Each structure stands twice: as structure tokens, then as C-alpha cells.
Length: 303
Image 1 (cartoon, helix red, strand yellow):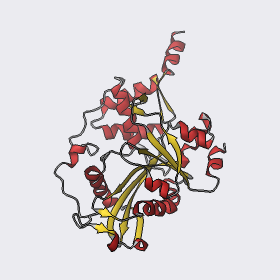
Image 2 (cartoon, one colour):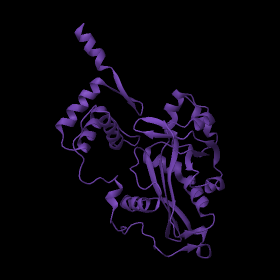
Image 3 (cartoon, one colour):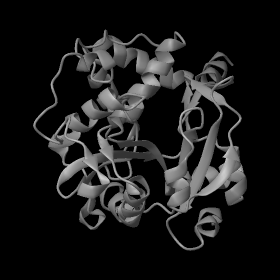
Image 4 (cartoon, one colour):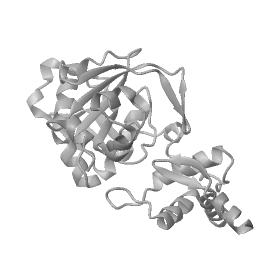
């Protein structure tokens, strides 16, 4: 009977994260790894290997695993090794750094309508060596700053006549978005199976010295035309619907409307803290854009 009780206790679920249940047995395993390894990254890699936790493209889900471990530590369930001295996700990591030679625009040289030829617009994924430049620009010029994007994502640069004018970031869809779920016609089980087919525009930055009419909507349109194919190439599956959340205390969402995105309404103003959603956050306008014909029907399919 004692053995049976112990087995049952091992099955107690302490946390659900990205459809994975963390049981008592899992916690014991994680505690052992945290105690026996020197760095958090080593722990995350070991856990990914043991749990066969991979992204859709086959790479280990190290960032997602690290996020899970941090949440468990916040709850006092595990004790991680001390953080490394260099924390790239911390805004202070960029203090005093000059812009690198990649993704450098001519800061101070304004780009205005008389100089702009929208036919020269190019929106492309950034190269791996441009990633630091993308993050530095976001940290310096975007009101949300630079934050590590966990999970599947793509980063883009927009160039006009060869000059950098904008940057975009796309990531996995928001888990909780009742307006979107109602629009699609999702029940909870179908949403869990099909959520990976929705992509979230988490960053969109037009550099502050650029003043060109209709540029933002043109960039969005050009990005959307290639987004699903790029996602397929990197993450081994397409996306069929794009979404974005616009802080209406700062912006009107004009470029999304001009690019024919559909306004679904305002969110309830919930903010996420750890694994919990709290009310009292900023209400945001939710826009969606279908990347395929009959996108909502495709998202409701159970196969």
C-alpha cells in the first residue's frame, strides 16, 4: 500500500506548461539535474534530451525549457544554478554598446517621401549575424525594448533602396485570446492542436528618422506575402493566420487597417505574470489577417 501511495504522489501535477504536465517525479528529476550541473543552460539541455523536447524543426527547445525552469524556481519548486554574468535578455546588457556593423542605417539622415521609391522595398529574414543588431535597435527605439522571444519565431528587416527602414518580429500565437478563439470557432481541444498555425506580430518598428507615407502598410503586406513559406522553411510547418495586439494608448493601428487586417475588438486587459493571467493590464486592439483562403476553416479541422 505504501508503494501504491508513493506512485500516486509521483503523478501529482504541479504545473502545466505548453501542454506538458510537470509531476512530482519530474520535479525530483529536475532537482537532481539542477544540483549536479554548473549552468542553467546545461540543465536545460539535459532536460530537453531526457524529455525529447524538440521544436518543430528538430532543434532542442532550450529557451522554452529555461522558461519553465525559471517559473518552477519562482514557485520554490527547484533551485537553479546561479545565472551567468552576461544576461542577454537584460536591457542593461546593451548599455553603452555601439550599434554593430550589421543592420546599420545612416542614423540622423532622414528618409522622407521625396527620396522614397516604394518599388525598391525589400522585406527579408535577417541573417544570423544580424541578430544582435536587430535586438539593439529594438532595445534603443521600440517602446517595449528587447526581450528574448521564446519558442518559434522569425525576425525580419525592411530595406528601402538598400537602406534599413524597419524591423519586424513574429512569434508563436498568444495562448489566451478569447476574441480570436471565438472568431475562429475554436473549442479548447482544437485550439491546443492547431494553435501552432497562428503567428503573432510581436514587434514592428519603423526607425524614427524615417518619414514615408504608406510605408508601414507596404512593409506589412510584403512581409505577409512570404511569411508562411519562410515559417515552413525554418519551423517545418506553415502558418495560416496572423494576429497582433495593438496598445491603443500609444497607437491607432492605422497601418494594420490599411493593410486590410480585420479588427476583432479590444482585449479584456489581462496581463501575464509567470503562468497566471491577471486583470488590470492595458486593453489592446486585436487584429487578424488570413494567410490562406478559408483560414478559419483550416484552423477548425481536427485532423
